[in-house]
Amino acid sequence: MALIGRSPPDPGEAALVLAEFLVVCLCAEWCGVCREYRSLFEAMAQRFPMASFHWLDIESDAEQLGDLEVDNFPTLIIKRQQAILFYGAMEPCAAHLERTLGAFLQQSPAQSREYAFASAERREWQQNEDLLRLGPDHPGRVSVEAVAGTI
Image (cartoon, rainbow, N blue to C red; front, side):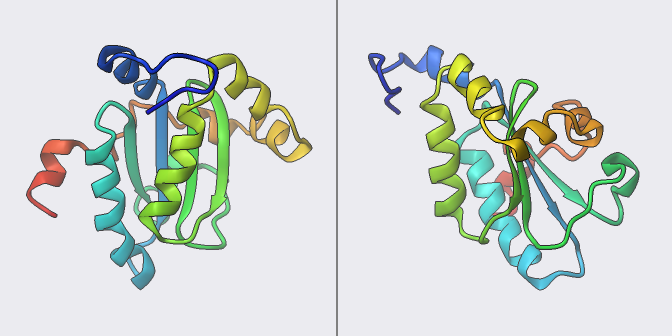
C-alpha cells in the first residue's frame, strides 16, 4: 500500500495506520443481500486485520444504533479515529469496500480530517451523536479468529 506523497510504509507503520480505522456494516438478518454480503465483509476483515470491522444487525443491535436510519442495505460507516469518512449504502461488492478503504488509507490523518469536513453532508456526520458513539469497543467486532472458520 503506497501513501500519496510519502514513501511506502514499513509493515509496522501500515499496521498502525490500519488500527485507526473502524468499518461498520449495518444490515438485517432477514435481508438476503446482507446474508450474502456477510462472507465478503468478513473476508475484508481478514484482509485488513488491524482495522476494526463490525457487523451490526439493525434489529438485534438496535439499542446500540440509537436513531440511525437505515434505508438501504448494506449501509457502511468508515471512521478514522473519530472522523467519519463514509456513511451510506454501498453496493455489496468486496471490491467497492476495498477500493474505498484503500483510498482512505492513502490519506494522512490531517487529510482524512479535512475530507471529513469538506462537505455539508460530511460535516453533519461529524455532529451525529449516534455515528460518533460507534467505536472499537462494540460487541459486534468481526475478529479474524471468528471469521477463519466461516469462510
